[in-house]
Image (cartoon, rainbow, N blue to C red; front, side, top):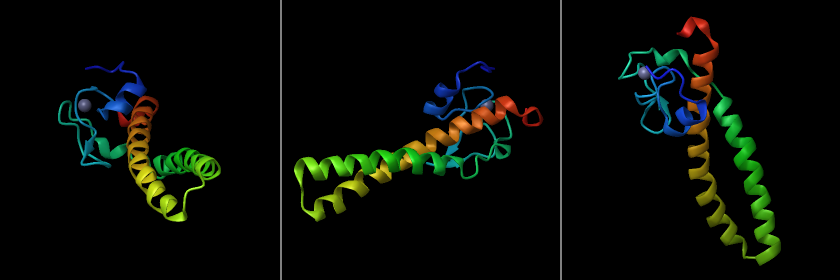
Length: 116
Ligand SMILES: [Zn+2]
């Protein structure tokens, strides 16, 4: 078992917090019920709204800053903003939520004795 894998690595790869081998996700954002490699019950590691809050704060702040900069620097028509920012925000939000969810699952596993 690879119990010493760094949280950042588990988060980026979306791996099981206990073994570091099994996939944490079923699909894009759904956490599996159990790890395929070590059998860890992953249902106990529900991150709740934490990943969404991380996405809102990080991606929201970055996007607003970028939108203001693009508007001041290039003064594009409004339809460019309407097309550009959803195309930037939606994929970044999913990626950020996935990484935050995996990081919180790994941190919960490490710091909650009852879930081991
Ligand atoms: Zn595992």
